[in-house]
Image 1 (cartoon, rainbow, N blue to C red):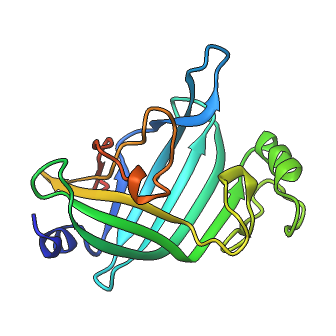
Image 2 (image 1 turned 180 degrees about the vertical axis):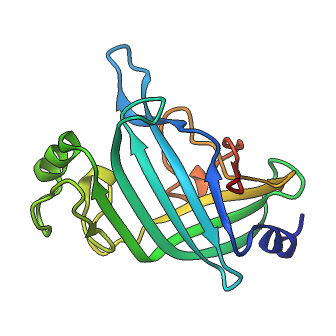
Length: 190
């Protein structure tokens, strides 16, 4: 698909995770393997190249214990074809309008109050705070930094694919770290 065809296919409507998804994290198990983290995604794209993304992180593979809700809003920058498969496109997601964190579990509140207290009110369950442009150590963000990911998009059979996380847990924080595989797709909600 061309960029215009992908834009048309994904515009004006939601895309959601089929089931809770697993990702490798930068945290390590005792044997050195990457600890998994679990999430679900809800994504919308508008024809003016803006997006919203809601992510719910879970403590478990079945999505029964929610830890945090993340809400990002910003712009999609289209960068041209990606070599993973014909029709895939390189995209940069820039969360330049909103990046909100809502802890949903007391354990995550404790982590935030320990590692992300400077510049924030005390974290509490269901208390949303903006991290846009702020230093936020749990996500590796420095003050003044706007969150940006170098990703990809591919549409096939009414499924929306993004890039799969690297097995070592690295993020898509540089052009060199742009994904080279496809992630589990999102679909239109039933």
